[in-house]
Length: 64
Length: 262
Image (cartoon, rainbow over all chains, first blue to last red; front, top):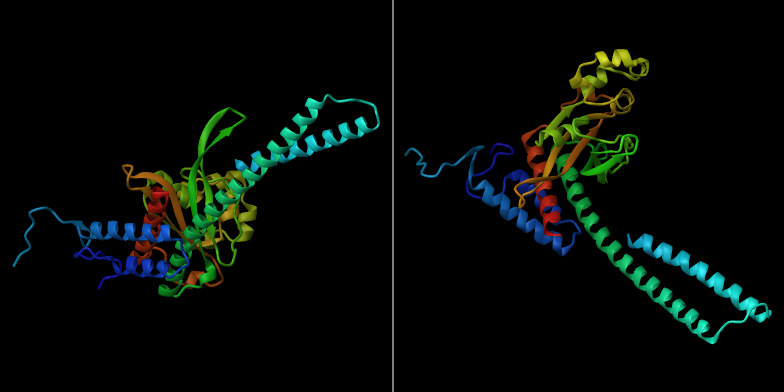
């Protein structure tokens, strides 16, 4: 997999995933833990609209 | 704020107690006589001062504890990033540093005009090296100023400038020769600031922290830097990779969310 390239299925990228996994291992407040979840959800939603750096256009049909 | 209020209250209480003590002494010595109502007032005021001071101290402690918790969370966010970068890029942890800057309005009393500058509110540097530069960052000054002005992730490679301006050459720079240096190399610095910064950092990346809920308002700038050490000329640069950018931008997102939700 290419380094830092957003995946298309609404998941976190490897870099994002690695960072948040490290952050969640830290001794942080419950509030911050909840905000990390919010951030991850927002990033997943954004990644779902990215196909290797270009926006997925509504109605686009990939070639068979 | 509360700290200042309790300070002045305590100072007032000390003066009050001193006056009451002097008054009591003078009454005892027969120099003055007080009306009985006055004594009740002294007691009343004393109790009010005591109550307000204690309530204020408790409030300050509570606010302080909350602030420490928030600062610790942000420090964890910065530390996680540096650990990831050090691990994945095989960098020395102690060479890395991260800072968060927010815009502040400052009045220049010489001309009465207010202008914005960037104030550092968080600094995480495991080894405390290099020391703070003491520069008042503003739009267009340094990588942090460039990021603030252009509102986008900005990268700066300092190795070439450090090679071109060794310490002896830096010391010999005059205002005239400094003004001949290209604008891009000077990075909006004065001669003194240029001397202070050059040779300190190998590379810097700065990224904006947005408030995603408010039509992407720019809240702050996050910087990550790597100190320039012996042999950096022969080493690869690491902070400009796609992986680093994504990690730095993830930190910006989580800090932005934390501020938005608090």
